[in-house]
Structures are given as structure tokens and as C-alpha cells.
Amino acid sequence: MADADLNVFVTEERIEGEDDGPLAGKTVAVKDNLSTEGVRTTCGSAMLDDYVPPYDATVVRRLKGAGATIVGKANMDEFGMGGTTETSAYGPTRNPVDPERVPGGSSGGSAAAVAAGEADLALGTDTGGSVRNPAAFCGVVGIKPTYGLVSRYGLVAYANSLEQVGPLAPTVEGAAALLDAVAGPDERDGTTRDPTEAVDDYPDGSYADAADGDVDGTTIGVVSDLVEGADEAVVGAFEDAIADLESQGAEVVDVSLESVEHAVQAYYVIAMSEASSNLARYDGVRYGKSGGYEGNWNDAFARAREEGFGPEVKRRILLGTYALSAGYHDKYYKKAQDARAWVKQDFDEALSEADVLATPTMPVLPPKVGDSLDDPLSLYLMDANTVPVNLANLPAISVPAGEAEGLPVGLQLVGPKFGEHDIVRVASAVEN
Image 1 (spheres, rainbow, N blue to C red):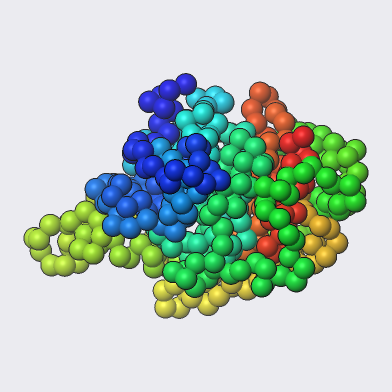
Image 2: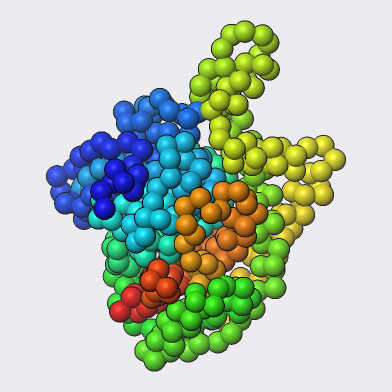
């Protein structure tokens, strides 16, 4: 189906890479919240409709250095706030598998570009599942790296402590090769780490080399808490994939993460609070549409934000500001951070029992376009399996695990900190 029908890109423009490199000859779609020098970067928002960055994000610079050709800026939920790519000011993206359904979000344009063959590879960003969600819904592979593995310099911020840039591709090896190209410390981003220094006995070889499909002797922990709430059709495809891994020599054990019951609530308090702070710069003076010059400054700021932001962004700014306000900080934000620490502890304990953890990526099949926007709570709960990973700052991958009712089902694998080699290896066995 043509991009004009799927609405994959906000801006279609070719950015040529270097003549040689590991990604030479590959085309890449880049999510529209990653800065591209001289090419419009809107974040899916009317607020930044005419914003043209004067510099490249580090990952964009590394893509060009690896020889890749960027073919466009992929559509996304406005400022990354959404799970269906329906909150974009430029209209919804549609799922190439079934255009009546959403592609997931917020990196829906990136996943749809890969699934539709509009690009060989894509970059998205993942704050609470925004790479893995659309990967699952579109039937492609998506990796959310360990926090600090990939530079966020040049990423327009939504929730700094949660988000990471991640690759999408038709295959596990392809996604891992793209991760090889963009990962690594960056002097412009103080949160980046060198994994060889952060982890004892860090494995040799590239991430792509790890896609060897060898799971003999690997222990996979099935997170029962995140399987029980999924749709029956999703669970069926997930269990078939786990049984296949077992037949390839993996040992399967059940593990429990009691804290995940509170993960969605904690995630949204933290994410919305950080968003309310990050989006304060869009006042029509420093960034964004002008609110005019009539009345006082507060009136001008209000007009700029009223015209520039969509309903979901306004909702999250208001809720985040409320959670941080005097008298409510300890009641909401501090409690959410305590829950985050509990989630991290639970993951550490579970990963002491298993090499990787497994869950369905999404607990539901892709909804139809228009079905979810009127019920924000149901959209937030759809993230139940993905947001705990961001709270714990761990790596995760979504790999196609089969189909249910003719629609893709993703299997999520979660690894220890800087355990990308582990999840790539097991994911390649699922793929095989």
C-alpha cells in the first residue's frame, strides 16, 4: 500500500550518507523527534510545524557515517505521547498489515515504514514501549536498548529518565546491526555509558553476531503476572513460541514480578511530570507558534499552547504539573519513584533466576483506527507489559511470535543491564 494511504512520513526528504560503511545501500526512516540538520522536525505537533534544527542528533550523524540513506521523518504520536500514532497533528498512520487498524505508537510511522517496505530500517524512540508496541502490532522487530547505551543528544525530550532511541527492522539481525551503528558513548550526552566498562565479562562481538539462534542451555523466565492479563488469542501465540524455544534446548521457568501491578501508575506519574517540565519551553517565544503580542505575556503563552498542543499533550502536561505541585509532590511523584525502585529490585531478582525474561509484548491485538482515542485510560493500560522495562532501565526486544486472527503477535524478551547480546540471541531463535 502506498505511503500516501498509510501516512508513514511527515516529511519525505533524502539525506545521503557516506559512500561506504556497514549500512551502505540501506534506507532508514527516522522518527520525527530526532533532529536532522536542515530538515523539518515536528515531533508530530503543530507547535513545531516549521521547526528546522541547525544540527543532527548523534544517532543521525552515526547513521550517515555508517553509509545509510535517510528517506524521511516518520510520523509519530505528538511528542511521543500516545500508543497508536493517532495523536499526531498530521493525521494517523495506518497499519500495513490491516489499514483499518493502528500501527501502534508512538513510533508507529517508523514501524509502518519497515513493514510496508518504505524503508529497510528505522529508528524510533521508546519511553514506555514506543518501539516495542508498534513492532509487535506491525509484525517487525524492535529493540529498546539499556538506558545509556545510545545517545539521546538531539532527541526532543519527553521524559528524560525513561526514553531511549531504538532500532526497528524486518529481522533480528537487521535490528541488531542498526543498533551496532548507533550505540556507544557520546561526549554530548552525560548519561551514556561504555558497556565494556559497566559490566564485568561483557561479551565480545557485535550485536548482529549474537543473532545465532543458539538457546541451548538458556534459561527463560516467563513472567506469569504479565501473561495472565493478556487476550486469549495473544496468549496462545505466545505460548506456542515459548514451547518452540523449549524444543530448541531452552529451559523455561515461571517467575513473578509483584511490583508490575503498580508499574503503569508509577510510569505515568513520572513521565507526565517530566513532560510538564520539558514542554515548558514551548511558549511561542523560545520555541513554537507565537501567541501574538496582545495582552500580557501569560495570555500570549496560553494562546501559543492552546493552538500548538493537541488534547493528549495538554492532558499530560496538566496531570504532570499537578503531580509536581506544592502539597502533591510527596503524595504522587515521590511515591511513584519508590514504586520505580521496587520494579528495579523485582527485575534484578527475576534475572538472578533466568538469563532473560519473556512476556507478550502487547496484551491485545492492534485496535481499529478511532476505537481508542475516547478512552485514554484503556490506552495507558495497554502499556502494562512494556513500561516496567523503562522504569528499570533494562534492554528489551519485541520479535514476531506468530499471528492471532490474522494479526501479528509480538514476544517481548527482557535482559539484564547491557544484556543486548542475550536478548538478540534468544529473539533470533524465536525468529528461526
